[in-house]
Length: 405
Image 1: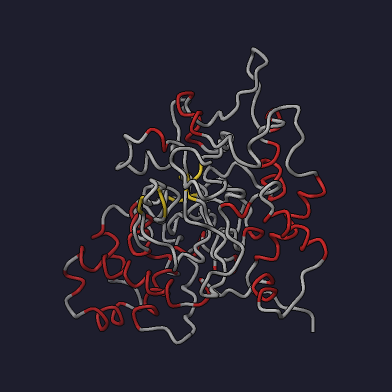
Image 2: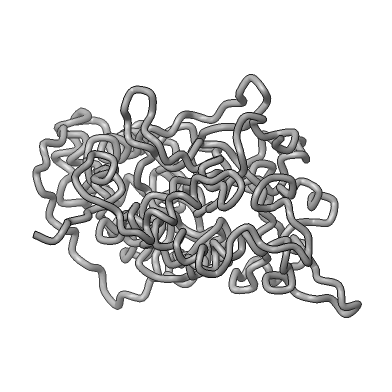
């Protein structure tokens, strides 16, 4: 049975990728602004076409070198192209963020945040579920000091007035739209939402696994073993939160159930914020999300993301603590049997387990379900070869698979 805030009928999160950030910071390493890439007509609505222009426009940032696409690259499943724990932004491209930037793919079916009848927090966008729509999710990156770092919405709109597509913007939303910064900014985020909803690149469903479900290709023996372990409730048990079967209506699986889980991920010293021993990212109960601050039972819980394109990622979990997918799977199954592999040891010789949570919230970590229901001295849920099998299967979830002719 899940801890008190998780759906009793669902099994544990087994391969958390890291939830959903906005068009957040880039490396800032470019010496000069890159030109805005041309937009290819993909049958998008005029608003969506504007959204694509905005998504790729570096001039809308304080540095002039950063756009949504900077760390949500279309060439890398709309995720970062580097292994930074958190991307860099700010006016000079040297301010580190607080969370790992996720892929923006497959968010079109993400529900707004709600509590299910049994009390399970579900849905929402961002790692803490605070954004209720893709449009709302797109707001913060323009203004966050560690991202595009504009001083205000007016600052963003002033930059938009100089964009080569400004007349298209006026034609779509009204000749006087730029006279009201609040309304103009709202139309910008609306256009970004339309782009993500309409462009099939954000949700192509063309991975090898999709083609396997359609009967077009076969999985290898190792991929099939990995799938079986992924689905086995006594082994990987990944299926508990990362659905792998078609829906009742035949819809392709999204590999997430949109819930939240607390995995006790190790503290990441590569994040500048952790230099302050009092700093903790508690997910649902803060610091970025404030409406659930009193729900201490939710402290440390983060969104269960889709595992689609997980093999393209170079940084994992909300704090970017891992940069290798095999290590991620190993953490799931060896976290409790071999905690010394993942957490530091104190001066007293005791392993400081769940060290990225204040002591009073460590009881919130999921320790009851497979594969977390083990103790030191017990065998992990997966052997090294089985870990390899699961990792190999996860590679079948990468978009754009083309079989050999």
